[in-house]
Amino acid sequence: MTTSHNRTVVIGGGISGLATAALLARDGQRVTLLERREVLGGRAGTWEQDGFTFDTGPSWYLMPEVFDHFYRLLGTSAAEQLDLGRLDPAYRVYSEGRDGRLDLAADRAGNLALFESVEPGAGAKMDEYLRSAKETYEIAIRSFLYTTFESYRTLASREVLARMPKLAKLLTEDLDTLAARTVSDVRLQQILGYPAVFLGSSPFEAPSMYHLMSYLDLEDGVLYPQGGFSRIIETIAELARAEGVEIITGAEVTGITTMPAGRRARVDGVNYLDADGRRQLLRADRVVSAADLHHTETTLLPRELQTYPAEYWEKRTAGPGAVLVMLGVRGELPELLHHSLFFTADWRDNFGRIFGKETSVPDPASLYVCRPSATDAGVAPDGHENLFILVPVPADPSIGGGGDARVAEIGDAAIAQIAEWAGVPDLAERIVVRRDVGPADFATDLNVWKGTALGPAHILSQSAMFRSGNVSKKVDGLFYTGGSTIPGIGLPMCLISAELVVKRMRGDITTGPMAEPLRARAEATG
Figure (cartoon, rainbow, N blue to C red):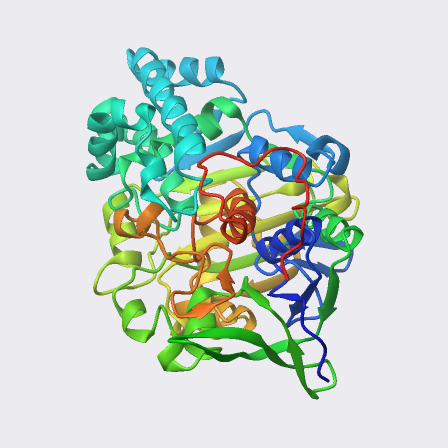
């Protein structure tokens, strides 16, 4: 099949692809989105079995103003699209070798009191830490997250220049060092350092600039959308269709076609296999790839047109891989909150096994457990609980996938660890549904580089202007969106990434969010 031009093709139906398609359509473009799988969502997927509904990816709703801004660009709001509730407590922490647990509060005052109760004097120190975290976050929103870095002159604002000495220190000092200078109790240090994992990094490698993450969970709070994170995907897909986006599932893109354009090349369309396995050609003036950037560059383009070829990726640092364990459990589990974290005592060893030169699966591991049935009755049958376990492991597809013995062993160890630390001795016996996912599944199902669960790690050399850009340097009309590119990892970052594609196409070099709602240009591109 060959179709006419005046079209934008978006590759990939994860959150960034759907969001980009919706915004571009609203901006006046004719948009077709191609998704390899039969379902939308990408990493933010869903799995259902025997009355249980599992989110198979992101599960922390942070940066609510970013979600709301995105919805407002499309003429609606988060309040209109989602049924959001604040988690209180926000999450629970179990620590290896320590009796009891720490419950993080839903607000700043409660968390300052908690830190003070654990370590006298820590409350005052955290007051300053959170003040700095909030200030840094606000600077990031105004000056860094919403910029394409097309022009570095826009970064030289009076605000950024005035804070340059502090920003320079935050960029060159790691997060663990800042946390250790702020509080002495190891548990509190780990609470301040753990957000590095959300960034696909280690507290020993992530710049302390990312202490801004503590503002998000300790002061701004943690929300949850009823129906799970699949509801976010559903709303964005609905909004995209309402803007006129054509969504085709079961469409595996096999190549991006180009034509000569002087010394460069220009996008001409994409080749794909449809749901019946037939070869199709869809011509386009613009292509936006929301697929994994490594896959896009090294598989969908010939070597001579790759901005980020294989040798580029050989020097990159991947975020962690993950073993995911989805469990349907008989009976109640009050020992676990909606979010629970299990921290090992020797954190440096834990992260060293994941990110070091000689990698191995940590045992015991620092785990994350989500129990959405604590908040959402619709995700599990009556009298049952829904558990999602994430075990960070090296980004290594050879660890295996669901059905492989090694992945099952890692899952078994995690279940036993949770049972012991949280005091649920019969947890394994109460499991009625189970599914495991490993790094090999990420590599094969999502075409993910090294099987990483998140993407390139947010170390200094892969953050902000040092992260992969959102436009090809060799193919005109080819753009990138998603966690592999600017601004980075996480659902809010993916929504911002979508907006940055619009900015790039418009030649908009401003550093802040676009005006709400998004209004189409007088003349649509094409």
